Image (cartoon, rainbow, N blue to C red; front, side):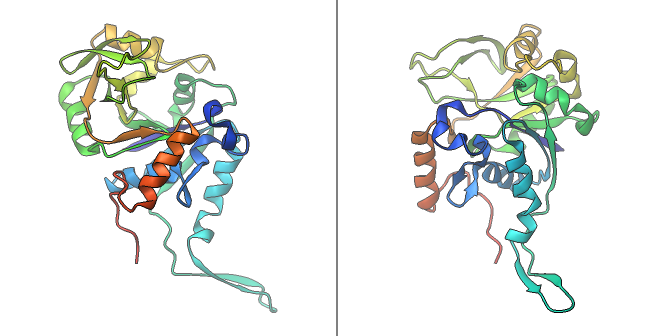
Length: 261
């Protein structure tokens, strides 16, 4: 199953770093948060990625163009043979498709614009700025059992996010802001059926979380998988600092993979 990652936004809340690079390329530890997200999916066996690029997308493309080289031992022979030999390659078993989905495209338009790379199969979808320890296998089982067009992961961070209105395991609507009431929000980590494309437009103003998801909710076609564990997005420098402290402690909740020897 393919994993689509939204990585094209401007990152306006974390401009201290996003003026140089897209937000998914801001590092936690020594690697971009995009890498952390992909490592997490890969640990569950999802290794075919489609990255929706936009703002400074060339930075993402250059990162993956050099990834194999940077993760390996290399000998450069500048003698008459003038060749490069790569030793002990530890690159990931990933297939990564990087797609320019437009500088100012909104989330729904970006997903619609990668439809040709997804084909007619269900797919995973997430944002390029958040990590979690959500059980992706359990999420997928819930989605398949529900028969819904889309299933999103509901989390409860409280505070500054828009709130989901729920009835059982279905999303029925959205509220603008949480009021420290324990409301559930869309934490990303979604599963989509190909029917989702009928709700999307390639016009750059199409916002996935607005009319398309609201229409699905009103039709009873939008499900939720409630996740009570760790979830954190990286909106601000404060968020980045918190994630870095967790990573440097050696106890990052999303770090579920084993490092290569």
